[in-house]
Length: 158
Ligand SMILES: [Zn+2]
Image (cartoon, rainbow, N blue to C red; front, side, top):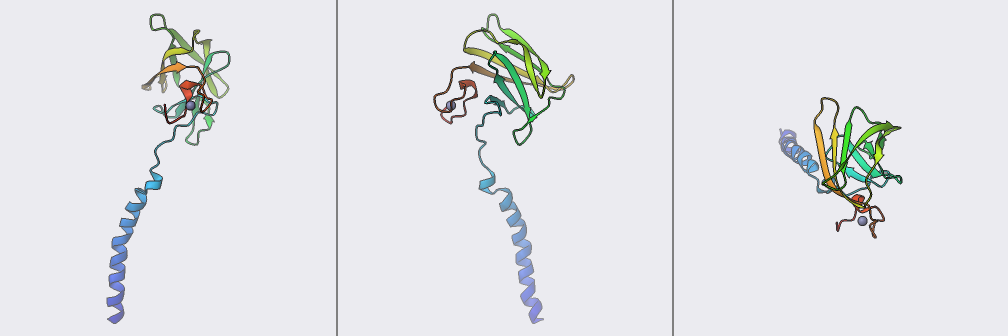
């Protein structure tokens, strides 16, 4: 009886503390990092509202390259996503369509001239999937801090 009376409170204490510990672990502040702004593998802009995430990148010949990324940020082959990019002057925007190019989707035409292009990216998950829309200003000038193009800038101040 003497042993039991000693052990029982310990078990009771464990039973109480274990779930509490599990709950603490779940809400560990170190697990709860604010998502850091990161550039894509090519130095492009991450579109995180689509699953899998996509990198929007303007190539040297001013084509738009879309690369889908796994959770670790590695390029994965596109599935059946249908991407449309509408960019350029709002009165006469250019609509870009895409074709598979290796592990990426590449626009079949170049973006219009200029380095401040209002841009709408639509990514449809597949022929019957829903469409995610991302809108941003495609600013191709270089950021002095992170050396990326402004549209892909990862600096906290932006
Ligand atoms: Zn920057």
